[in-house]
Image (cartoon, rainbow, N blue to C red; front, side, top):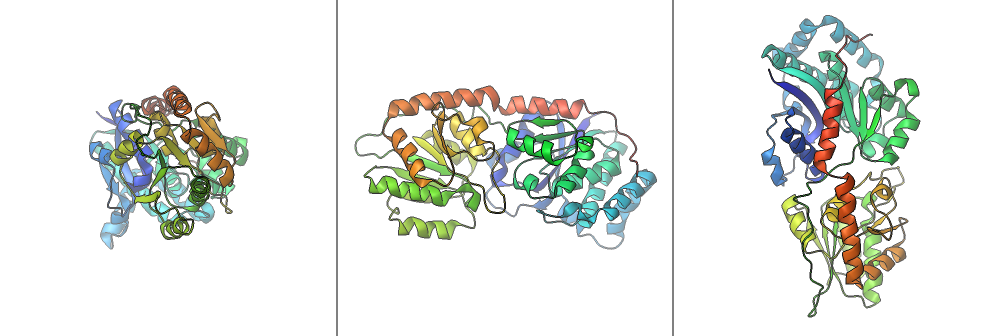
Length: 425
């Protein structure tokens, strides 16, 4: 008899969510059998190469939620027949709390209930085939966690979820508390998030909160021998991230302009795509940076590995936006540090938990291009400093950001959950 863990995600696969794919692969390597339920298709054409290595079946719920007539009704009847009490209690819970889907998200509570029914029916059918579904885990605290909560109640499963950034900070505290109250554990990627969860959720609703850092494959992201630029070759600054406001790429461009006007030679390559590509390109051109700053577009992780192997300094300068959106710990920072590259970044979200200023990178307050430029200038001018910080960066990641170690901690959460119980109304 096989034992499965249900994974609920917002969309699959997402280029910017490599950390979830890496987590899935690490769990599978440790013998955990997964089934992935994606609320929607990503719509992206560029896919990370490691997605092909995932063994878990992927079920796209949006395809099944569009069914009509008897085909749409049948899942409800199956779930109702399995446990009328659980079905009615969960349906009443959703009806009485329509605001559970308020804030950041794309689905109403009713739509989340529909998707939860589809997951519950899949669990029932797996049990009928002799499989034991042990647990349900959702990634992201908004729609996926609400769907996961409802599906777990319908199917009599234990439930946990991972909270990240906007999904955590931009839903009402009452909605977060409802999700937490139904979970055996809440996982998050940084202590800053854990502090917020502990302050936002009443103690009576709060299960154990575990900080499990998004790990990287330390074999894949590894230091390579770097030669000091010479013979007219400029040192390379690499930046990677979605081109959105919270990543602070406009601050980085302003800092690069200060370097250029100060006579510092460099080549900067910015990898990523997003809604700010056009305004950022205009800003680059207005600052006279077109000869030395190139927007590379979205690239897969193989190309990221190759880019980091030819990088002298990595830069990412995130900020907190007016609506409170911010990063936790950007995974690209971890990947750069695992590759032995010194980083220049800002003290936002969980970044101070990863980067120690002056030891394994430079960390400065956000929104100050002059300080960003100062830190970049110091690293570009000193190969020995880059080598020393790069080695310390690698050591930091080895200590606490190994994807396999993270997966082992997750298996503990999945495997030590108490037995399922009937849901009280």
